[in-house]
Image 1 (cartoon, one colour):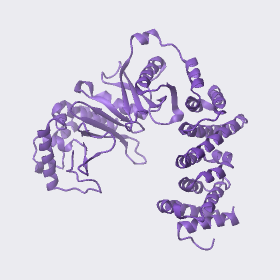
Image 2 (cartoon, rainbow, N blue to C red):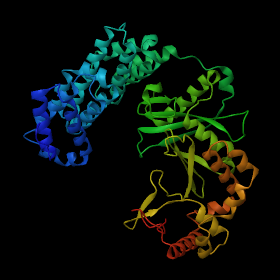
Image 3 (spheres, rainbow, N blue to C red):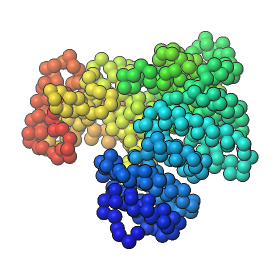
Length: 507
């Protein structure tokens, strides 16, 4: 390749010509070309419709790049997969399927995710083709279970099962038998593959899945039935979708703080109910609990599942549970009329509580620094209409802030003037006092998040209802006075907006 390509289309055409004539040589040049294309991904999306007559050549070129020897650069493979994900179509899947076993062994989850993305875009015909080939692969793998590379192969099985879990069209008659075998041979495949197999089986063959679940079920101990330890159950319906929800089953911890609970997270995607052992959507670590046709029944089954298993369990050790523990250790939500209404699970969850007066959002985060592994916390308050997702509401065709931190609110309650609040950089009296307390000192060496929760507890003990009342939608006069206070502050000092709505636009 003597000429350096100047456009995306030109590069794609040259890439194919290059691979076709000198495959296996000058790999560095090929790697640089792929990486240039990867860096130009934004432009790529704009020219996908215009790459004819080179489109077929492009697909072939990318597949050839995937087929290079394994010792070639990883970034080349990664970038090739990225581009293929953007422009792949049904015919591309047909070509990929010819060498499927080689690719899935080399790329694991990355490759199956590319196929999933293409299937979502291309529709049922393409997805059925992929599902059929996935089943072929599972059967193929079963023929050399004693292969010395079995650990590597088991990861590929998990990748394929994870993709099958997301599939909409599971009507392959061969699936049930092979999935049953994976469920039975847990020593060979591991618990991850077993749980995923159970989930896929439940979607593909409800009768067989229920037979396996019922065969392994044990009656609930009488003592547990007579004295349930469940403190509360919260169903967080997601995106106003009656077919999808997170269900949190909380149990009081008798030996610890009277406020502290252990919460167990379930995901309901009609009709499947999963226990998310790690508190995240990592389906290979989820346990299939059962099938239910509505959310209320699923919540009931989740409670029964906890009652049955609780005597033999240790409290879950994951970031989700640790974040919940930090809150319930220091804050008596029930005494203040707050109920948990929303959870966005993950390594750093968002948890929202609501009372008759307001909402409080606890947004856990990481530092973003490579060597700082602490958990941090942002706390904000909203009126009842504040959205669970996002920070803004559209009012009169303009975005307005609907979640607010407490710095300005506390100064308003303390009776400071807007000028005084600006002058002291929004610092509040109560927070300065907290920093000098024994509580703050004792929490200093734990985590930044727990130190912040201690401060919230200190503020609530001081202000109680006065803080929450500012956000009460029924107290119109108080909100209007607070709104005026905010506007007068920003008339004195207008901070950089960084593309966000003006900070005095609140609702």
